[in-house]
Every structure is written in C-alpha cells, then in structure tokens.
Length: 88
Image (tube, rainbow, N blue to C red; front, side, top):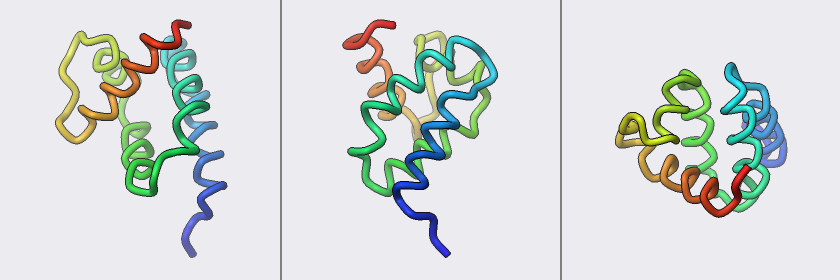
C-alpha cells in the first residue's frame, strides 16, 4: 500500500527535524515547513532520498564546501536559496 501524501509530508518534516548535527537541525525544518506541501511526488521522493545522505555531506553541499551529486544539485540550490531568503 502506498504511503498517503499527507503522511509522507509529515514523515519527511520529522526526518528534517531530527538530524545528526545541529546545523542541519536548523536548516532543514525551515525548508521543509515552507516547501514540502508544494512539492510534487517526484520532488518529495528526491527529498526523501536526500535525507538518507550523511549529514556532514549535506552540510558541506548546502554551505558550498563541496559540490552535491548531480541528482541533488537543483534541490540543494533551492535549499541554499531558501536559507538566503530566510536567514536563521
């Protein structure tokens, strides 16, 4: 049985809040709160895949210390834009 959209959004929001490092605990919930509801199913699946990545890698991608993998490049760019528009 497929996961209901509303359940998936809630799950992804919770996964965004409970990360391994504090920096990502601050960055991702803000992004999730403003973006998840408007994402289509493919974007939600990609965000879910991104959340499976190591937090230290995610942090380096978001802060520009390392280049993200091509599959996540647009999503990471959107997170960077969100951070720029909504400073913590």
